[in-house]
Amino acid sequence: MLIERDKLMIDLCGFVSTSSDRIPALQGVAELLRNFGSYRWVGLYDVDSAAGTVTNIVWSGPGAPENPKFPVTKGLTGAAISSRKTLNVGDVAADPRYLTTFGTTRSEIIVPVFDWAGENVVGTIDVESEMPNAFTEGVQALLEACSNMIRPLWRGRFSAPIRAAKR
Image (cartoon, rainbow, N blue to C red; front, side, top):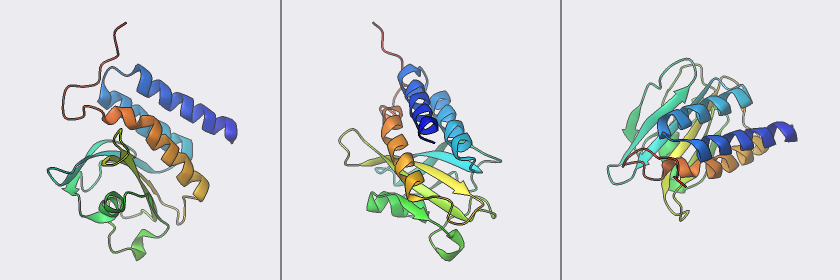
């Protein structure tokens, strides 16, 4: 398992360091995370605190999210943003904050992506599973490490796409 995790981190680093366009890089990240854990759905979101919105950037799974844009105060994502901590919910049916993406989702984990200073949440990783309690402490720690690895893909998110550095 350690070799698989190392490969995941190397692959994520590749998306971050070689990307010339943010959206395809993030799409690759979503697909990589989904395939790594055999999860049903992974979405990456922008958090615009000034506008008070959370917006889906990309997703990997059977369909688009039911709520592609919503207020920063809503849902499990809103709770993760306001607490600035990962929110790992083993049974979404028991949590009234859950905003439905798919009716068959049983567990969900929302991992904040922080700005360079580590102070503000600028994005989130949202992973959903049809299995209850799908996200162990080890999975949570791995997704938090992934969040740190892909953080550069949120730099300049409201300006031009990230371009590879010229040497």
